[in-house]
Length: 399
Figure (cartoon, rainbow, N blue to C red):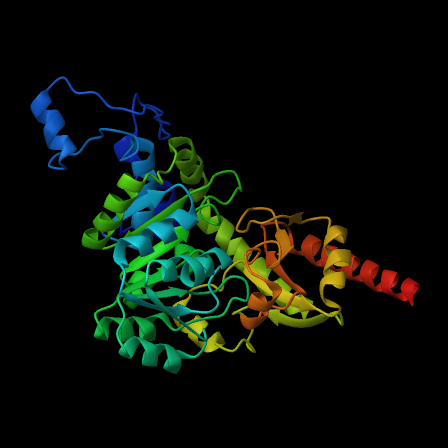
């Protein structure tokens, strides 16, 4: 469907092949197994010589439709799926890294990803080097020492730092590394890392792809050769996407462009608006001209995303007072949904980390992660205004 524009493909891609009984929507196929009367046909499907399904842990028609849609939207040869975004990350890294291998990444990855790098991979005797996210020269220097995998996340969670994907992909390829990018925050609406030279792209489909906070899932896209290796690891280790979740993700992806376009606009306005409040110490959003790598973001992104974060004066105490006052925001550990979602990193993205570990990553305890929803922007701005006013009023009463 490459001739169609993105919004059209988000609705139609991957679905027609799975329709049945004249239905216009992909069915939810709950069957665990798929039967064959012809033993030779069964064998051909089982060994991959013929299309079909054998067992739900391996493949499923509803899940396949989801995989084909994200494959199309990222412009990839192949895709596979997982039960969660972290399953996508852990299965992919485990597929390509073995004892004695070396992986280079950045310090600002999502907290769960960071734990894989700092806790689990070292147990496997994998050498892990984490670089300053915005220091491209440092990353290149470590890659030049040799590595099996170069793993990036851009924009990062939660401080939305930006890495030059094309530059890093060239550095990784020069050393024969497999270059992987977590594209969850950007979504394929805003950024296509495969077009910038990377090998594999990961998504936590739970977030923007699904968009309604009602289904867990993960996805990996890239070359057929590499994706098949990860699929083999996943089918044996069992982190399979549930068909009902796949259906909900498919349904959500139909409105992906509409939602993300609105979230891009809302996040930009919110970021600019936050800078007008005295209680706000800093605002992190790649769409702001004073963002350290704004120019890189402009080069590789079509939109700056629906995610931002900001640090408040007074740290945790201000966060405690401020967040409950918001009327149009869920205080929850999620992001990318149609509703605005807020929370401090100490209970969301980096709850697994100690205060000292968060500080080392440049994440202050007073940082608030803000996932812009699709609400009317004037309501979101008014909500922030009244919440800050109540915090200031409370502070004045204490003094």
